[in-house]
Amino acid sequence: MNKFTGLMAVAALLSTTALANAETLRWARAGDALTLDPHSQNEGPTHTIRHQMYEPLIIRDTTGAFEPALATEWGPSADDPNVWVFKLREGVKFHDGADFTAEDVVFSYQRAQSENSDMRELINSIVEIRAVDDFTVEMVTDGPNPILPSNLTNLYIMDKGWTEANNTTAVQDFEGGEITYATTNVNGTGPYRLQSREPDVRTVMVRNEDYWGRDMFPLEVSEIVYTPIQNAATRVAALLSGEVNFLQDMPVQDLQRVGDADGLTVKKAPQNRVIFFGMNQGADDIAADNIDGSNPLADARVRQAMSKAINRDAIQQVVMRGQSEPAGMIAPPFVNGWTAEMDAESSTDIEGAKALLAEAGYGDGFSIRLDCPNDRYINDEAICQAAVGMLGQIGVTVNLDAKPKAQHFPLITNGETDFYMLGWGVPTYDSEYIFNFLVHGREESIGTWNGTGFDNDDIDAKIATLASNTDLDSRNATIAEIWRVVQDEALYIPIHHQVLNWGMADGVGIEVDPEDQPKVKYFTMN
Image (cartoon, rainbow, N blue to C red; front, side):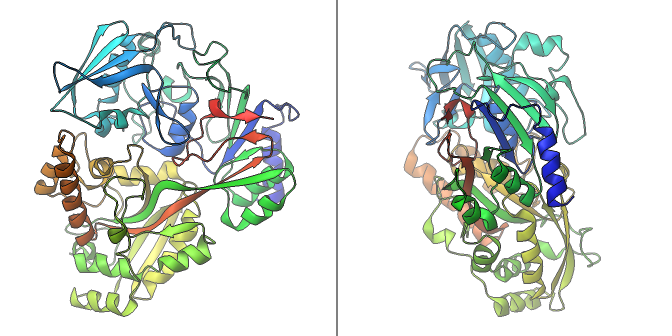
């Protein structure tokens, strides 16, 4: 599709919207939500769309601070440190008019703990959830959990009756390709209702005039028209032409062009997200290389060599046009456990990398496939292309396979890739979140995004203590110990911390959210 054809396609998609209506937010970014099922996929753009229609008990505002949502108060029980008590907001109704009660919270959390849920790691410390009365919920944890509220900001509440009536009590098996009623239909309590959903084409939401927070938030947007546009040039053309008035995933090469355009503004902020490569070290042999009978990635010296081959400064300057910060660990600076010292540990050393490969027995190099998304992260495929050339300098021949995120992510969660790109945001602002998903050995309800095959019982035991250790100094010492192993083992190859750039018409008022999750109820429209 060329730029002109792409722009015409976008114009056709938006033709039903009255462009002169200042209350319509015409929003575009590179990719779509993977699903609308609230508990199926723990993925940023997917959460972003769901946040407009579903709500958690606690939400983060545009600064990252906690804000009451469906819970108005929360805290540990005075009688039992293993119990958190949540007081629920009264008078809230779902979009179909049903009353919101504690029964819906209990149902939703139990659903989120089930087999297909991608949210299980967040609440695996909860051993029981119970409704004390219609507006009080108690969550019993396996030991005191001082950071439990941080894990709940993307855990959405469904209407138990609606879910049962539509035969969608089971979480969608996304990796298995299942489609359920909940994947394309919504009945939430949020500020916007779903009007229409065409996956990968357009999603239209309209303001919920009965929203409990109608008088508490600006809620100046009456209609949201969300259009995924994978092609970067087409996205920018849509913004410049006025077909779109809010754009995420701004191409870095067009920042000045958009910023200089009359009537448009670019806003920038660091993102709570790191981009990195994962390597399957756990298999005895891997299918994606040309080495029979062994796995070069199983040797830490090979992983270290591959990391040394990556020139992060060149990626920052050439690929990202300065819009990134080179990373030496897979935690953003926002996160408890991040240190400047560890974040400076990755450096480029071609000769040192070659020496490590030779020492490991791969002096002649090897070939391997790199799996990469092409519609998820800023310049994701271009970063992978740059890495191909850099790894080639040390004799590692990389065959790049880039595909949309809907096909890429299951490769990781199903253990079907040996070398892959992934980005990770940390909505809890704590290292435990990273460890549970990316470091802990893969088990039934933990380590689901750990595609490395790393499985260390001692590390797993240390990770498990983080949910209940109320001694801050002791807990932070354990976090530091775990990070030291992650760093020394070269478990991942950190690339950079993302920088966010949002483009918008001058009349659209919103500040950049470090989670890259704009919540439209905060938007103003002038």
